[in-house]
Image (tube, rainbow, N blue to C red):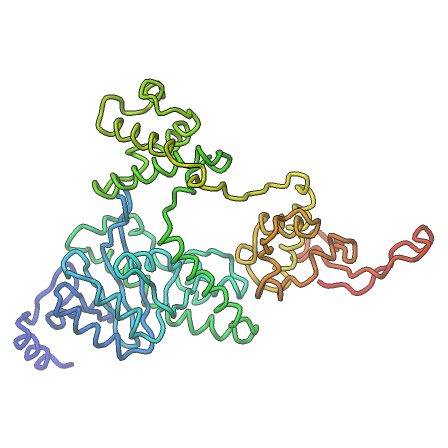
Length: 444
């Protein structure tokens, strides 16, 4: 655009030809440019309406958010970054007003939503609408299926996939502060502008490896789990409560719900109102007597909160046994510790051979379930995760064969990238002592 046209547009938009702010030159009333990257700043409802029209026309929308969680009951959304084919936008939640139309558009009118480590974005959406988008592509998850460590940070993926390096200087910045600095804006745009390119590269690789179906299967499982997590009170996550009895768990639940209500009302971190360890100690105390409760060090005696704590414990003790929570079934199986270590090492070797992230496939607890199932000690109704869906296709019978002596692992050389190999063993000779075990095909 020549100077004359720039002046004409500036006069029409009322911005002035040389209007600048913190190094960013205004291009239209809400369109800025810096280092040849233009983007919209959405600060008014009308601005958001115009952006939503563009989003509905776009087959994909890349999304990221910036927020502050310190000292708050829930993270406070401070900035939303959006990328489309030929558009970048920054939405200011602190000034734009209601965001429900934005989240509804993402859920209902966009072909595909692209994210990295989607939990935060999905939680903001769920808090607004009570649901999340049905179609989204998470580059962090996809990267795990092509052999990149899972979970990997955004800058790690930029380096591995696009050989790009972005500054980390604004990672801990105050995103509530206005106006945003040039560095903050640069950082925010960097988080979203490359997501589509990363997606295209990852999708091509997934197709080459024939793992695109695996990705979508796992993505659907994650979406279901996220919705369950968002809907379900998380009192069972209270540390050191796993071994409590049902009556004690009833106390934990009542106290957790009390604390959550107060924290939400006052926008406080729940643990600052009543610490987790005090909740567990109150449950173990087994008494609603105010004097015995007051003897617990760290409780706020003589306050309204103390009275509410006593009332909550009393409510729990008044419940019938049929109303007590059932303990979660968690089995450590210490008798299988060495076996689990061996098979987990084998699973790591398999993942290295197949070029898939071990952190995505499973952990020691998944191997422990598999071993318990093999020995018949896993509770009925539980199916080991490694024997379901795409994980079953990947692992096959390998771990079970190792467990029962049909396959072995052999050290090749310790100074090479893949120092171990799997060996499929031939059947035992009848005499066993004479014939021993013969080695068959090797899998490196």
